Amino acid sequence: MRILISNDDGYLAPGIIALFHAMKKIADVEVVAPEQNNSAKSNALTLHSPIYIRQADNGFRYVTGTPADCVHIALTGLLGYKPDLVVSGINNGANMGDDTIYSGTVGAAMEAYLMGIPAIAFSQVERGWGNIEDAAQWALEFVQSMTQRSASTSVPWLLNVNIPNKPLRDLKPAKICRLGRRHPAERVITQLNPRGETMYWIGGAGPAKDEAHDTDFFATSQGHVSITPLQV
Image 1: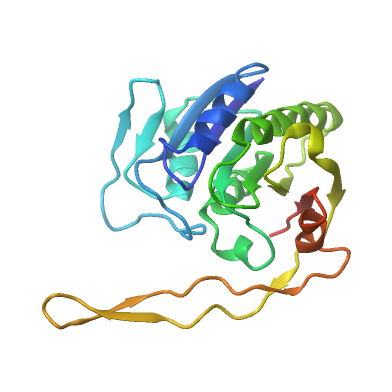
Image 2: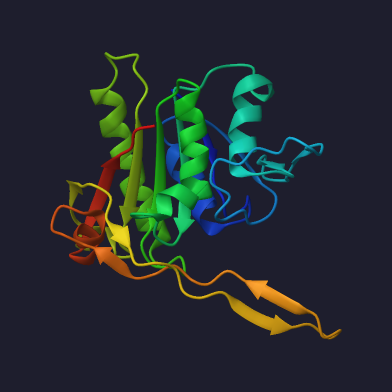
């Protein structure tokens, strides 16, 4: 099996490093990821400036572009072959509900799906990389299960997975969920720079609004891994 890995936190992020070491136990793995943090870039492609690709000492390729750029370039020429699966993450923080519209982690997986390849976006619910090796081990076991189940179909699929920051032994069984919904984002933050000019920062994501029992918000709040099939 051949797997392509990308993310939106950048090629040096602990999440993608842990995911790489887990996936290489079962597959030939290539990593093509952004050079810098590209959170909230969604499915954006870079169309009006050149993109450069370089290789790190650990073999990862890093790209001066977005997560979707990484996957698009990898699949349309860089790799020279079609991988069996694309996995994105593990993201530093949840991608639930409305987050999936903005997420670069989901955007990378979606780009693969749009190009006919099964894809999974993995995220940890809380920021900070706690228990990241456990999350990667859970992801490995899930990928093994999914590839066995889908071996007989050529139809691509797209899954969004959120893993609570817990030791592997404490994670409750995964639940298939729908996306919840957040309250509107917090107000924009304004500051003055040293020249007296006003700067604007986008406010943080709003708290959960729709967290009914069948949502990803509820499942993860109870210690379950949430799995949400996405459609485009």
